Picture (cartoon, rainbow, N blue to C red):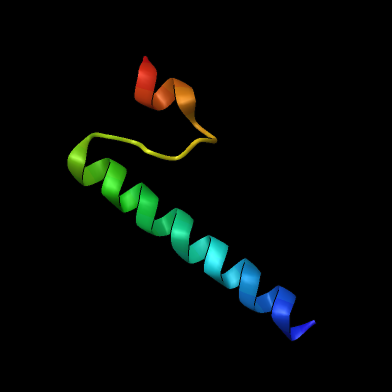
Length: 39
């Protein structure tokens, strides 16, 4: 159960970092949002 919490926390952190990178560089590399990086 602690492992699941750690995984969720890591995912949230990763998404936050990707969002920051997308906002600063203008390039989104997250596979969940292809429309953001393509069009």
